[in-house]
Image 1 (cartoon, rainbow, N blue to C red):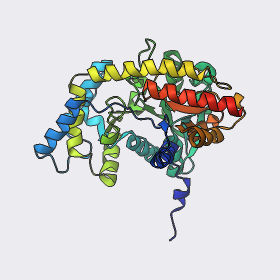
Image 2 (image 1 turned 90 degrees about the vertical axis):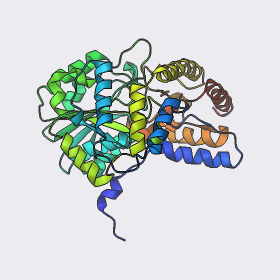
Image 3 (image 1 turned 135 degrees about the vertical axis):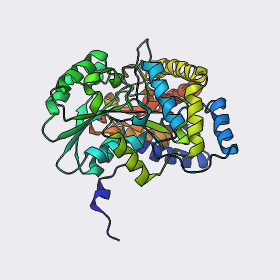
Image 4 (image 1 turned 60 degrees about the vertical axis):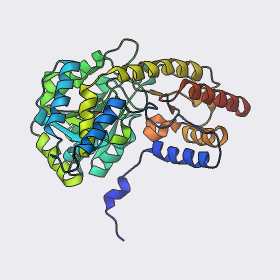
Length: 390
């Protein structure tokens, strides 16, 4: 078979590969603690599960509009108003099976040979993968540990040229847990006013997970870029609904029909019952969300404390999401080697920083979407291994 050349540019998400390896070790009887996968360890709230079950019992088994049922899009618009005070047209919302779909649609709409798309590095690996798949050149935006893994607005603006079509931003961020300060965002937005042809995709999937009194800064707050802004969010992280596959994108008026057309051509529509569960998640009690975030906050503080006690490891405190991204350069091991040896020799799964871009060398990602008990045991195992091997 002769494959399309573009398939050679398609990457993957290493967290799923490590998950498979961890599961294989567990199947052999090994004790494995998985701090690699970015998935809440809480169940989907019971009221949401019941709404999905009821939708099935009520006969919601058929196709729905490609951009989502009106009630779901209206619920998203109402939630945006509740959280941020912004009025948005539900017809500009396209509901899709997970956040990655909005990413992929944005790359396909803007990316082609001869163009450039800027993306955060270290960053979610699908950004670079889908940029390259689209034919565009992937241009990394460097994130700095010394600023809590924020970018420099001046540097980003300096990377824009006549080939730039799209800039991807992610705050709170995967894999770093970094939150970009409002002042840096405002500087970037002001500079982007001089580049009216450059679109922005703001990945805000962790928007409900900020700590230390920080409020989430949504790019929707800036009217000067609203006509070229794509906002990505969804249910997976906030409501522990990763397996339900439900996300949304808020698109500019001229792009929403294109995103809906891509939906028709790729997945037709989102699972019908899942959409009713999504409505309940947004309109029902939010207690479970607050409880999850409070638990993540406690785990965050503890894992950072334990990581900073490890030989050769230092870790800045993440301000959002549920990831810690410690610097491991002082161990003398590269990220891939340390990832593999920790899994094989201690049974602790973490993800090499290089899985998130070339600038991730020297770091590991740990997810603290796991219990305090698992975190303590994992850190004990790593501490003993480092003491014995360094």
